[in-house]
Image 1 (cartoon, one colour):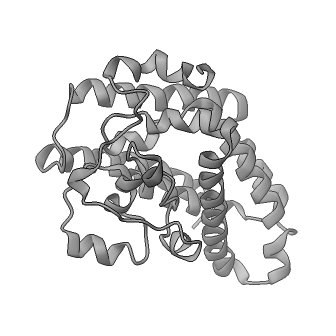
Image 2 (image 1 turned 60 degrees about the horizontal axis):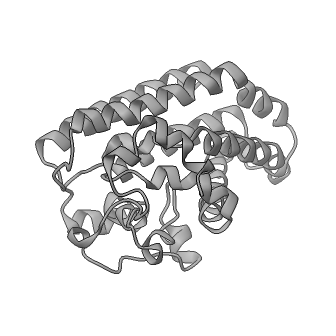
Image 3 (image 1 turned 30 degrees about the horizontal axis):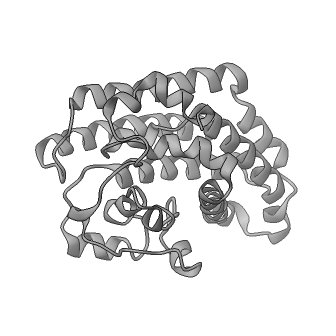
Amino acid sequence: MDVETLSLLRLTTILGVLGFLLAVESWTPFRNSIRSRFRHIATNLSIAVSNAVVVNLLFSGALMLVSRRAEGWGLLHYLGLGPLGNVGASIVLLDLTFYGLHQANHIIPFLWRFHRAHHSDLELDVTTAFRFHLGEVLISMLIKASAVILLGIPVIGLLAFEILLVAAAEFQHSNLRLPEPIDKRLRLLVVTSHMHWIHHSQLPLHHNSNFGTIFSGWDRLFRTYSLPIRQEEIRIGLERYSTPEQVGFCRFYAMPFSP
């Protein structure tokens, strides 16, 4: 599959999964909305569009260029896994990188200032997957570019990872009523919504766990896996941002700069 086809697949996957999960959430939500669902969706998608516009204006195509330059050297080049093996290894290695970055976002105070904007959402649905502060997005891009260079990630491997990453994020944040037996089996391999909801609990003991982005194995391996309470007992968000007025579009972007 060529790069152009994968780029188109990335866009259609993002929009397709978004539309599907929005419809399913409306039909059978796990939690009832605490405010206007339209306003919640509009706020998060406005954040996503604003970030996309700035990133594309500043760095349009830059990550793909870095990936093309990285081909032919880096870790994957020396491992000699072949084209298909390189794609698989790219997905696994980048997912491990983002697991580490996600954990760092909670440990390092400077990074937490930006990441807490994501956690400020008072309720979870598929649009929360796009609720990231621009500062965190730019930091993530720099980390991703560094990983691409050091690991020698090919363009197709990068695009394949990004397709899975966004689809996984949409699924994890969705307000989807998935039967526990199914969720339990799925989370043996991937991060599910039931696993990720714990990560969005108000309690630091809970949200400082379950850092996985695609695969759940990293949390099990590094002992950050946790499902300590029933899903119905989770209080979503952060205590310091407890009202809808505190988490709107403008205040969202000011969060890293408040005490």
